Amino acid sequence: MLWLLGALLALLVLAQIFLPRIAVSRIRSRVGRYGTVESVSVTAWPALKLLWGSVDSVRVKAGSLSLTPAQAGGLLWEARGTGSMDVSAESVKVGPLRVSDASLRKRGSVLSAQAVASEADVKAALPAGFGVRLLRSEGGEVEVQATGGLFGVNTSVNAVAGASDGKLVAHPLGLLVEGLELRLFSDPHVYVEGVGASAVTGPAGAPGYRLTMIARLR
Image (cartoon, rainbow, N blue to C red; front, side, top):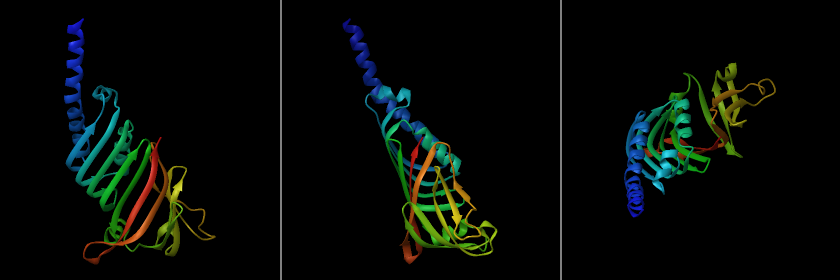
């Protein structure tokens, strides 16, 4: 009987030592598909819970990442069993938009993210001849003045971006175009609850925007 207890204790000790290391290696490999990963740490007690995909906390520090919105949603869904997660990256390109100083927090199912996008990066992500200017940000919505061919209207139009049934959408303001809608982000596992934006000054005085988003996994 004593030898059995000793064997179980040894197994628990070995699991506590090696399973987090295996988890770190898997996370580094998974995120590393999309860029550079500087560090990863995992905590789980007891570590055997990792075998069932349950993790107490994860911290990831990355350099430069590039992925599609669908790939970003897939990574978030893979982390659904993580109680607490903190991810930071020097720069991230999601679809056509590149942002810097990006961070993501997960507490339970609640997600909060923020990043800085320079005016130059915003312009590069938009079609040629198209531009936006921030007007206001409140109540989980962002209103901008859009110029160009948005919504089929080649003029200047005010548009609001915000959450609609868990999706991030934009729609123009005005009697003739109010019913039009442009889907900016949609994922079956990520329910967007609100977005925000504020004007900031980046390095060398370059203008930009701090973007924020609140969502939850479902």
